[in-house]
Every structure is written in structure tokens, then in C-alpha cells.
Image (tube, rainbow, N blue to C red):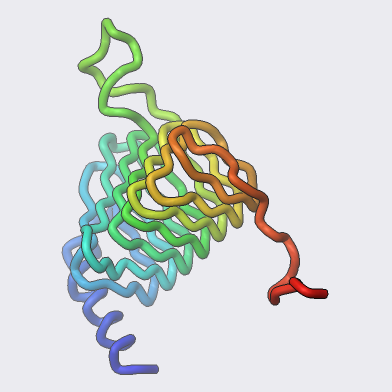
Length: 189
């Protein structure tokens, strides 16, 4: 193992010591980090094994707003400056890559003009396995993103996204289906 990898694991462990004492935080084995992971709030946060939270610019923020809230991050997930806010539940599957995006299971305001100053209703957000979410992407409450999907930069996702597609835009829409074939480029055959 390279010395840099060992150093990143050690730094990931050292910089998360305060969270390791919390009964509401579970950090999986072999966390990579550089001190840019912030976990706050009264709810539960669970990170699977081999999570890479080494952020190059923005801080990774995992925020629960209620005691019953859960943020669950799967194994081998790469967090690079993302913000995840949960009042109920946000789940990120295994092998995902999250750029400087924002995932929220509730909005800080209500849809109703009468209750505008109150938070919106919580609706779980589920990101299935092997999803890549680019920078400055917003995933809104109640959204499920299907496995093997790519969400392009600056997209705003209001509705569920099927598996195996590339989406982009505001509102996000399917741009094309991903090739479901095995590895390798089959052009010219």
C-alpha cells in the first residue's frame, strides 16, 4: 500500500475522532479523509467501509435535523464536497461518487404560502448503487435515482430517475441511455 494511502487513512481516522465517540455516528473501516468531513445534528449517520471523504475544495456536510433522521452512506462511496441534509432519511448506495452536490429530504420552507416559514414535509431520498452525481447538482425531496445513472453538473432533480441513464438540466431530464454492454468499446465492429 502506498504511503499516501496509509496517511489518508490515518488522517481520516484522526480527524473523525470526535464523531467516533458519538453513539449516533457509525464510521466504517478504512475511511479516507483530510479533515473536511462535518457531521452534525441529533439523528443517526452511518458510513460504510472504504468511504473516501477526501474533499479537494468544499467540506462534506452530513446534517440531520431531527432525532429520528438517518443518513446512510454505502461502502466504497466517494464524497467530494457534498451536502446531505435529512429530517427523515437519505440513503446513498454502494460505489457512488458525489461531487459538490446537495441532497435534501426536505426543503427549508413549506410549499404552502400560509406555512412558508416552516420546513417542508420530509420525503426520503434514495440514491441506488453506482450512481455518479456531478457538481452543483440539487436532489430534491422524495427522489429515487436508479443504479448506474450519471447526473450531470448543475442539474436540478425533481423527479425519480430510471437506472442506467445520463440526466442533466433544470429540471433534470434523461439525455440518453447508457450502454448496458460489458466493458470495452464496440465501435467499428
